[in-house]
Length: 541
Image 1 (cartoon, one colour):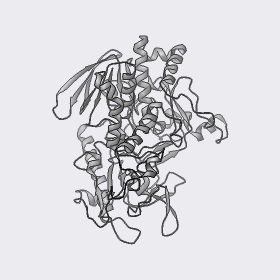
Image 2: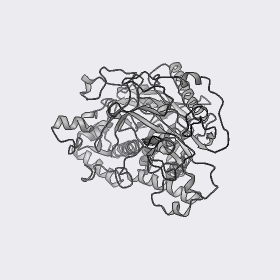
Image 3: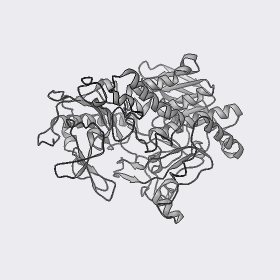
Image 4: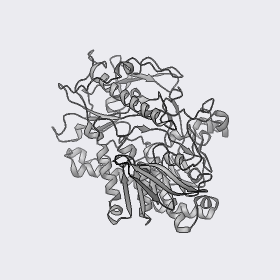
């Protein structure tokens, strides 16, 4: 089996397939496996509030505990931190497990180690897909090119899993897919765009990590395009409240303004979302938002300052599309997205307003060692959106959105439930959280119900031996926003690996498994045995 893409979904798929005894080759376009956790520096994951107990696969729960164990075994934790069963190394308020990307990388290799050492699993790093050979409705091989040597390798397999960040395998294999925003008439969704636009995707972000050392100066060289970004006023609908670089932004709720406070010198021991500013207003604390490592958990003097991840509204890049455009356009936008993130850092170091009335924090230090890059930015941007297969079943807002489900079923919004899928292969829970798009649409944030991952959304309408294993399942532009986070992508990848193993063991194609209720049920029994939850507990629904 061949897995193209070594991100969150790819690693989960490789783990599941190798566990089933399949010989697996997994490719990764960067030199780090792990995707959102590592190369994208998003190891302060977006997770639902029940993640410690349910709503995740058993292997994802294992990953989380191994991260905690890594800190306990290798770091000089305080006695209190070491005894905390739910240790959150960064105490960021976005997640109960904010940690460093390279810890994630170590843990992923630890989980895959038994299969790497026996040769069941082989990983090809810095290998990007460039071509696919097909015959009718099947993929025969995929060619990958090494990013530095430019040498090509042809990979053959009975099944190919697309676990890339933007659905690259879909494009080169002529698999039917959708990209960008569908129109409201096509999907019937309350929050769909007025008209379809294949170039209208969510913003990408080049994340980066910084720590703060008082009374020191680490100001970076002024970025080439700093003036542009410092003065940039977004043109979005609904309107953005002033310049992009500010301690406020648009809020998706009731046309309000979202207020922030940034004070790395405060560095609170406990990461809590809201603090009070000088006017006694509740504002969101950006410093502890995605804090990766809190110095308060470690022996005094271990760290000069805590480390936080900058993946904020101010460095989202929506000014140009990077999916499905010419390579020169894509490269130009990626370079400009880097300029945006570096300019924002420079602004924080030199001109951002401080609570004491001063300007800038020169003690903010770009942590290149955290990202593993020379420029200090993540190895690859965070892709919030991917190409999505045209599937046997496409999940829409009508399946998982509280408001639309209530309206469609004439049910009290407080009692309504998501669509129930008899062919469930997993569960998820995340709001339909759409960041500003390249089409000029501002934030959209829609309440999503605890939902499932239907098997039908993982089966292409034509290609027989391709299975999506990341953010590329059968969803819409709107519903995909609820299926893009770490635990759900892991679940999709793991279920894809188990599905491929089941098909090979029973000499059956995924479409046939879905069409046969007995085979679907047998697959679900296998998923349950492997620790994949198929339904939410009744008290959550």
